[in-house]
Length: 108
Length: 112
Image (cartoon, rainbow over all chains, first blue to last red; front, side, top):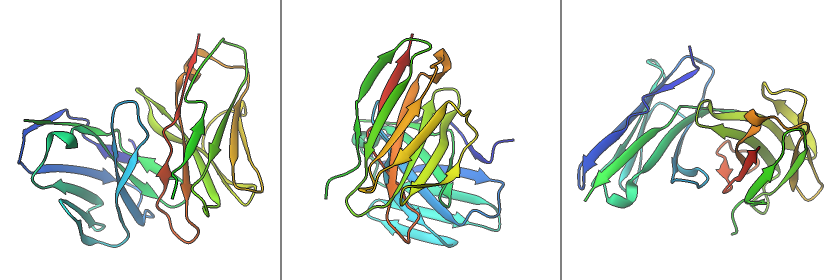
């Protein structure tokens, strides 16, 4: 079993829809959680960084962490075609463990 | 502030050769980590350097090595290249006292 599980999708939504992404993890020692966006043939771009359980909002993005369930989520409101990318969850300390990434397509 | 830079961006090598990749972190960041990204295995941690010392290492063979210089720039070396080493090699830097990592564009290595 992988340390971090993420449904690879693909996920296709119409423009303006809410995109919901999630990851589960098995290592209860994980304290820091991140979401990255990666466009084709580019490096991952940090979107959200959270430490504690609860919600964190940044513009159209909301990250949720539920440590008791070992479950994290990312919501993208009012999705745009430019949001089409692969979204990766990551967690850990110095060494990050990544999910497989979910490929999202937002249809205009 | 400039982001993480990596050189070269693309590289083609022959099996058995060795290769050196370079990474310059964000100014002020002293921690540099390296990751390998492949379609089959995803993103996997190689190692982390802080103040010229390797602090953490992933589960890769000894053919993968690295170093960090006093200006925080880092290099990664892969010796005796194998076809399976074809991947996107990503470098990430981290500000001291925080755990978020910022990635560079990567070096795409193809081994033929």
